[in-house]
Length: 108
Image (cartoon, rainbow, N blue to C red; front, side):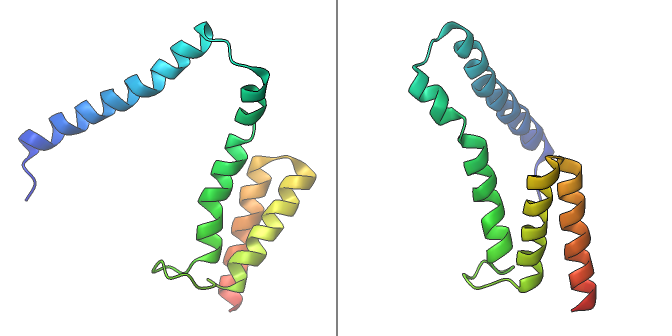
């Protein structure tokens, strides 16, 4: 059993700590000038993070074993990529990927 007298203060301290760490970077960025090479590098971070989040969920099995998860995930991801490329609309991308995934799961 979790002691709530200890749990909530720890959660609060962790939340405040996370906020302070993230907010400090926002404050520093206004006062700090970075070289152009760093600015160019920072543009690629969102794409790299998105890839790092999506590739394991598409390619790995549920139990974390490195094996192919199934064709329905790969096909749904490819359809979502094509929709994102053509429409540049995040809702259309998410919706198309979900519809294709659910449709393929219902068929298979």
